[in-house]
Image (cartoon, rainbow, N blue to C red; front, side, top):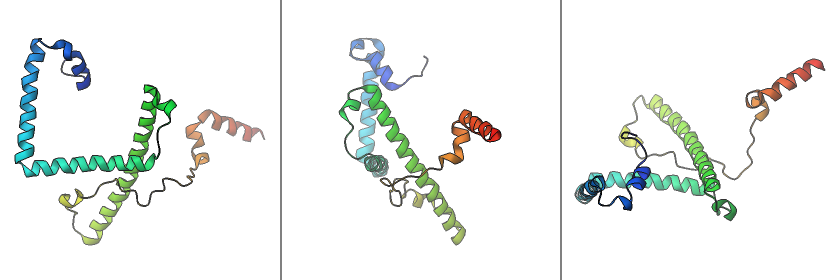
Length: 170
C-alpha cells in the first residue's frame, strides 16, 4: 500500500513495538518538529490562532446540532457493541448532515435573493460568519408526514408492479 491508508492504521503498524526500527526512529523527530512548528504558529500568529478558533467553533456548532437531534443517552444494550454503537453514530451523522443540507439550501436561496435585490455579490468575508448549523425553523420533535405513496413505485418497484396488475384485473 504505497503511500495510502489511514493514519490510525499506520500508527497501529508502527506502534510501540516498532521502537528501535529506523522508520519509527526517523518519524519521532519529524513529529516533534511538526508539533514545534504548530506551537510557534499558534503562539506567534494571531491570524492562525483566529482561524483555528473559527474551525473549532464550527465543529462545536455541529456537535450542538447533534445534541439537539439526539437528546438523552444511548441505551446500554446499543452502547455495549461496537457495531450497534457505530450504527447509532452513523444515523446521527446522517440526520445532522440532512439538517445542515436543508439549512445550506435555504441559506443559498437567501443569499441569492439578497444579491438579486441589491445587485451586488455577497462578500466571501461576510459568508464566513454564517453556518448551516442553526436550528431555528426546524421541527425536531414534531410529527413528520412523508408522502410515501407518491414514491412507492421507486421504493418498492415489485409491489408497485403487483398493484398495477391488480388494478388492471379489477
